[in-house]
Structures are given as structure tokens and as C-alpha cells.
Length: 352
Ligand code: CUA
Image (cartoon, rainbow, N blue to C red; front, side, top):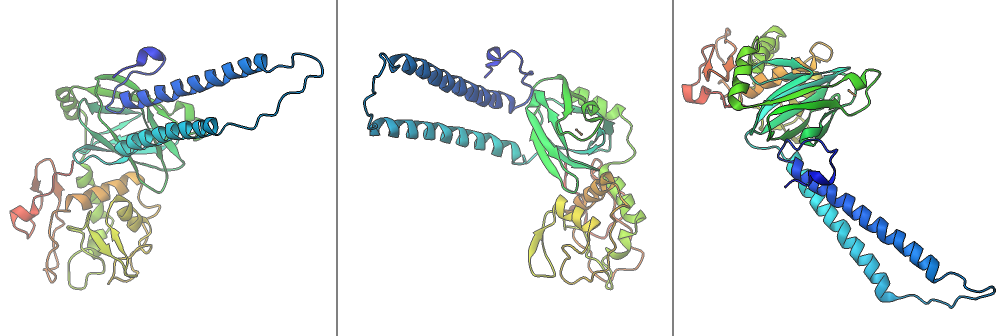
């Protein structure tokens, strides 16, 4: 439903949330106007009706009116409950992750936006999306707080250093839309802008094909996993110093203090940058921090790799020493390196 004619200066409604967000906004505006008008009129009417009509006039005592007082307490209370319930409904829709979505990683940095598509395409101050498909953004910042704001989608989410925030939407219109940073982040804050281009799915596919990519996030992560030496401890050998990471993503882990934590993006990120904060039971405090050695984008790649092996089973211990690192390539659906599991178990989950 579009009531855009009421406020002609609102941006185009270009996502699944836009119409309801606007309707809610119009409701608040109309409510505000109605109450302001009623109060304004009452002031004038009472000022005239109850003015002092002769010098020395003493007004009569007013004892109050119970019915009136209940009415003006209960009616606004019910109205605020409507605002609360409706606002909460929209909020939970927007911040409950959809099951199937195109997952894109966004990094904010003074003063630019970087985006990485699941197959490894990267872009700066731009975002290309297919129309009619749910898109989930997972975002973090390299420095200070930014906010990813696409007015046409009515989507605005803080991008915070040291944690992942997510937001999702479904573009409903093709075209080009504004992208802004909506959190003051330094001198070039106003220049931290870009464009969101929504295309037909076939066009989007063509754009993906024509955009150079080195490796998928998971492939880049697998390379880092070997290059940074993670593979030396997270092996599956009997004397392994760290847990095997096959099948770990998204599952509950028991920590050395007995509590449980789900191995999600946030936990994995923390364990890379601050390994001893939440250590899995049975392992010593031997892992060094990778704080300062990996960028936020590389952390994302490592997590993508760990996610890509989520459907694999951990190898039984006491394997021969030269175990190749399993490299999952989600697009091909095949393993680049031989893995000891049967093919069915080794099929990487379709992560995006
Ligand atoms: Cu980034 Cu303002």
C-alpha cells in the first residue's frame, strides 16, 4: 500500500519493508497532528469561554471529573500500546534473519563501504543486488561506528567495530538507490556514500560473471587457514592442540568453565582475535591472538571457510601426518582436495 502522495518528499519504496514502515510513519504523523490540533483548539476555546468577563470576578471551584480523567488516561494508553505492538512487529520482522538469503559481507572504514559477495566479487561504495530476493547483510567496522543506510529500502543499521550486526531486506524494484553513512564518523562522513543497484536476476548473474574475483570467501579463508598456520593445530591428529573445525559452525560448544556457546560468526571472530576469552573445554591456552594480523575482511574469510566445512564430519584422530586441508568450493559443490569422508558427508552445505 502506498500513501506516498501524503508526503511527496519520501524516497521511493523499494523494499518489502518500505510500505509498512511508511504506513507506520504516517500513522505517527497523523496522530501527532490530531493531538496537536485538538490541544490547540482546546486552548483557544477555553481561553475565550473561561476568560475573566468582569473585573473582580472569582471563578467557581472545579472539583474534577472522574469519567473525563479515566478517558484521557485510558485512550492515550491504548494508542501507545498500538504504537508499541506495531513498532515491535516491524522491528522483529526486520531483525529476524530470513532462512534463505543472499549473504553479503559489508565492512565500514573511514570513509568507504566495502562489500563482498559470496562468490568473492568485491565492490567499494556500491552494492549490486538482484530484485525479488532476500538479502542479508553481515556488517562490521574496521575503525569507528558507522551506519549503513539505504533510504529507499527503509533500512538503517549501525556498523560497529568489534562485532557483527546484520540486517535483511528484499529489494522490490530495479533501479539505483542512495547509500549513506548515517552515523557521524569523522571529517569525511558526508562523503561516505554510494549507490545500490538493483537488477533483474539474469542481469545480476551477468554482473557477477563480469566482475573479477580471485576466490570465494571460503576459498580465500582456506588459503589463510593454511597460510596463517591455523592448520598446524586444528588438525585432527592425536596430539592436536586445537579442536578440529569440521562440523563446528552453528553447533553448541562446551567451554572450559562448563558453559555453552554457539559457534556462530561472533564467537568465531572472538576466538580468532581473543582465543582465550571463551576456550573450548579440553584445550590449553596455547593459541596466540591474531588481533592486528588479520583484517576484518580476512576474519570474514576465515569464518566463511569454517562455515563451508560445517557439514563435514571431524576426521577420526591418528590420521597420517600430511593431511591435506579440505578446500570447499561452494559453487562447484565439489572438494578441491581429497578428503577422507564419504562423498555424501563431504558435500559442503549450500551456504548462500
Ligand atoms: Cu561512516 Cu559516517
